[in-house]
Image (cartoon, rainbow, N blue to C red; front, side):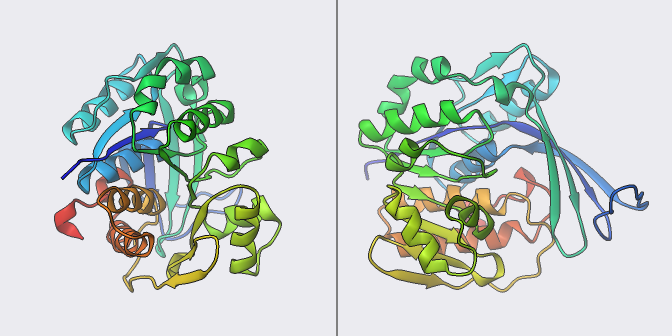
Length: 295
C-alpha cells in the first residue's frame, strides 16, 4: 500500500498540569492538587497522535536551545516522528500551564517562547518538504503569517490541508481558500462566523469563506460534518472524562491518519471520535494520546 506522507507544522511546548477539585477564581488559592509535567503543544500533540496511530509523520517546529527543547525532540523521535527540519530559537522553548478540575474541564495559559519565532522565511526554507507531503496539518500556536504561508504552499502543491483553528484568532481571508478541512470546536467556529446556535449555518458560512469541508467537534455531543452539501452528525463515545487536554489534537491526528489510509470522511471522523474518547480518560497531553492498539 502506498503510504501517504503527513507533515505537521506547529507548536512544541512543555505542559505543566495541576489537577485540583475545581478551577480557582481570581485571587483564590486551592490546595491539594496533583502535579505532572510532560510534553505538549497543539502541533506536537497532533504529530504524536498521527504517529502513534500509524501515520508517516514529519514534524516541523521551533524550540529553544534548552533542556525542555531537547527533551521534547527526544520524545518525538521515540514515537518515530521525523524531526530533521526542526528550527532553533534563542528564546526559551514554549511552556503551557494547565489547570484541570474533577470534571475534566481545563483552563490553559501558554508562554509561546520559540513558537512565536517561526517566520515565513522558515516556512519557505522547508518548501520542498511541504510540497512532497500528501497531508499537512496546521494550528494557530505559531504566527498566523507562517501558517498562511504553509497552507498556501501545501494547497498549491495539491496536498490536503487540515487546519485546526485553535487558539482562535483573526485570520487573513486567503487562508480559508487554501484549507481542505477545517476542524474547529463550537466556540472557535462561532468566533469566525458570528453564529453560535446553528451548527449547519456555522459550517455553511465557513465553506462560503473558501474552506472545502468542515468537521466541527461538539464535545459530549460528538462531531458534525459538512462536506459542502449535506450535514452529518457522528455521536460521541460515552466515557468518564478525566482531562480534556489534547482530546481535540488527538481527533485531528486520528482524522488525518484515517483519511491517509483511504477512509471516507465519515469513517475518519468516527475513528477520530473513538481516539479522542480514549484521550479524555487520562490525565495529561501526550501521555494520554493512544496508540493504534488502544482504539
